[in-house]
Image (cartoon, rainbow, N blue to C red; front, side):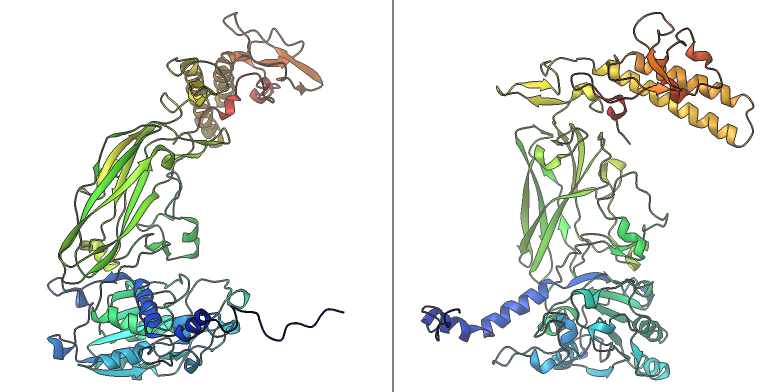
Length: 598
């Protein structure tokens, strides 16, 4: 019943000059050049140490062929991704689950060649290149969990590695996407890990090249003494082979930065770089992280100047400029990303160990220096508060940059960059600074009465009240009550610990008295509302007079008004004598939400 579709699409989509030019330009030399630059940008240098642990020798990368004055005469290229464009490109390349048919990926236009890593290293010349696959992947995304099947004997691999000056091992995955490529284990398959271990037994320096589309667990092969360098490129695309060869040969400076913390165990994913300062890791020195978020080395030793601030205090409605000078002393231009991290000293809601507040990618010509600046505002430090709204809490903040310096000493083996809060007395001495941020609250820890809000006229008032900003209100009194309540709770925990091991006969009675007395004094300073009542044993709760004879105390069952809470009987628990009912909308905030600190 529908009308027939038009035989020809209307202009301008069918035969316009713009459409024809666009179609003819696809895959052109300019497209290929752009794709090659994009592939170069994906290369991240994770590790680069001197071979044989000889600090007198330069790092393994870049490789320098013998005919160019270097010492590399023979290279062994191995690994399932070394001679495959499909494994460099991943899913959605030509087909939904990608393809391993390299002819369907290669560029057909002049100047648009897309060699594999093996082909690009052979084309470099100046050395002899041997190739052994080592192992073979299944070749389908639906078998992505299957191990790499060994194709060369261990003896053959060791002999070939021993005859070479350097081994380039390119590890990866079969192309995949969506559900067929899902994993229940992040470990790289045992076949590829065993390949690296066998090659390491020959004692020849190894450059490990990873082209996995996700962080795979390497189970320590990255830390083997023979694995002197690690390059990660995720999925660089059809031009990735040429880009990786350029990186290995030092034709450009790697500039990639890790967008994640590379885990050493699956549980490490629960410990991101922005974890709370109170969160504990597995207790290891590296907290299950091989390379931290933002990590990425370069061949040259970049130089950072001091981190300078236009002001040491950031007003609530103003801005502060942070700047740092970065120098590139090498003979190659470098695209470098400057990162600015921050960490608050104190916050009502537990602060993060670090947060990336800003970053800027800059081009550093050879032998040049560039000043990089960031504009910081108070809202950059806001968080979702206990009041269920965005708030900015006043206080001191540490700022620092990570300058991608090549590490020395014990950390050089992993190529790790250690980041710690500048307030802890460590970290980078130059590129760090301290800043005071003016927030929406005042007072130490910003107690319940210290939070401020603006009214329609723009004046500041206490949250839920009418006191002007310069008034002190009742925050100090409530803070004292809260501290007393905290002390009483800690004392109760200690006494119950004694009781649990049978070393304190009178702990039960003493703990009850301590807890009740502390809670009683804390709550006696907070007026109760008509909503704060409950039923214990069928008796309605009624206010009790405090021990000093004035004010309003806690609540106890009706008929027990003469009881002294400091001598609570065994059948009356401290919980029975304390009520945290629903807060009256017109009354004070709930005391159990009055503080959070670390």
